Image 1 (cartoon, one colour):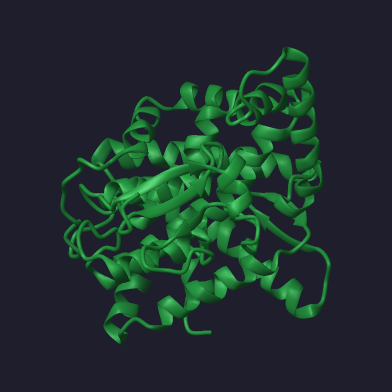
Image 2 (cartoon, rainbow, N blue to C red):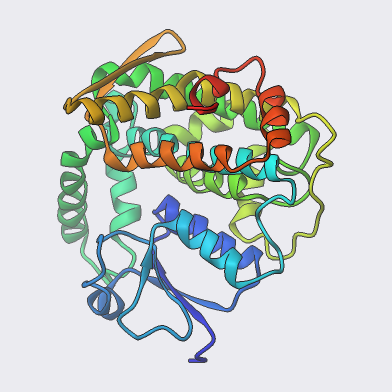
Amino acid sequence: MSADRYKVVGSNASPFAIKLRAIFRYRRLPHTWYLNRGAIAEATAHVRPPIIPKVHFPGDADDTWHVDSSPIAYLLEARHAGQSIIPDDPVQAVLSHLLEDFGDEWGTKMMFHYRWQDHDNGGDRDRMGWWMSYPGMGPTSDEELESKTRDFYEWHIPLWPVAGIEPGNVPLIEEMYRQILDAWEDVLREQEFLFGSRPSLGDFGFYGQLFQCWMNYASRDVMNERCRRLPAWLSLMDDPSGVEGQWLDATLPLNKGVRKLLWLAGEVYLPYLDATDKAISAGNDRLEFEGLGFRHKQKPMKYHAKCLQVIRERVSSLSDDGKTRLQAIVAGTDIWHYLGDQ
């Protein structure tokens, strides 16, 4: 194998892995995709934290691997100039980061709920378990596949509280899914991507989670009922290597769908991150906030407190003019309340 190729270890069922794979494809970076199975899984078992995707950079020592898709995307930006996924305008770049974070981290709740609940609770875990368990398993009897599928989804049950998948949170999670779908249809009525005719980091963040929702049977039904354009867009985003385009003129207003996504970020996602940060700072083992008229309670995740810190740092790094423009763009949302001068 050529020494200048990246190695990307992941799973087709991982929103973060397919997001990063799509970024490699769009940016036309030489890479080899490995399913996290067999010999490659054993060779990377030492990687911490034990998450996917795992990426080996050309020139690094054999046992050096990078994890966490968002930082990896920024590392690739520093290494390669062509086909950037960061808008040229600094304010659009901050908004792209915010939307990528929103898609990545809140989208996990939607994907996880529809994937791992049983049919009576709005999910389809048996069929999704088959789809996720079989790759890399090889020839398998029906009995063995059923057993391994059951083991697989039972392994995920302890993760439900971490993702906030609790009965009292389901109404907000499902309503957010519907509203995000509607917002994306509005985006695609007017333009190809969030910030013009080329994909940004924000597009890839939502793609990873929404593609998984399209693969989950229960959430696919909801998507197909509400969306005409989004399923086809997700198929395009799986391999956008042939896409050419331009960034939206920074003097032009953002389209209706992007404004709706930003409103949802201010209404639900940033309040969630803020409640997380406050719970951790206070030493509380539960967070609580209200969004869209629903209460949401769960165990706080330190990673999500870090997400809020990083977003605030990116806003803080803008020039005074940039901050003024950002504040004007997000007027009518609660974003500035959470991200303005802290």
